[in-house]
Image 1 (cartoon, rainbow, N blue to C red):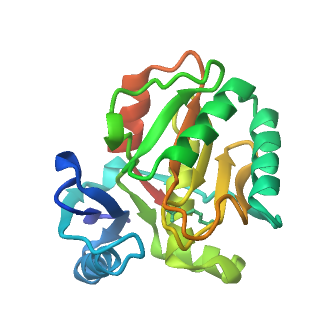
Image 2 (image 1 turned 90 degrees about the vertical axis):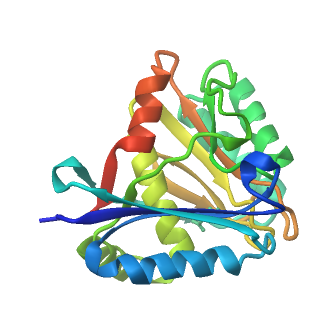
Length: 251
Ligand code: PML
């Protein structure tokens, strides 16, 4: 049914490529049928060129064909939104949710500390949910979930159900969070955007779904990124291979 799907991924930086010290501006991932390839690639380019983090001078777009029998279908995580009045309240609520998912206080402090102080991560940082130690060796590149997107029908159904949330930013975040939540050894993801104009973040897990928290940083703040909390028995190669290689379509 999903033949001729293509993975499109984009990364953009200012001041040269990321690996030569450029500031990360924007990234994007999607999985589309051939008929939407051109339009979606154009939209991705627009996203890179019109971003509040800066004026990208390095943009890379990679297009890859995926064969239909490699695609895993998943239902999107359920979404809830917790309206909070301040960053303090938002962080307090994040701590409670992460604790309820079994993430240790040390790991919570390390994860939140990382996101508060980081302005230039392209991918996620992988932390042990018990010790809080960083487990990936990817430096500023981090670990990036790739090869994922919405099916046409899946997006139509979801956007009808959550009409008030159906922005490209949230739709993309749901894809990523759903794929990541289904990775082996995964416990919870903590994210807030590095976009200085966007202050809502989320904590996602298979257990609780996608829980949005409306205030996790102040406007104008370039900090943000993603933390993936994993269990102690994690096999990093297996975990990263799922995130980077397994094609996932939300249905
Ligand atoms: C990002 O844009 O970098 C991440 C999106 C975070 C939250 C999206 C939402 O649910 O409002």
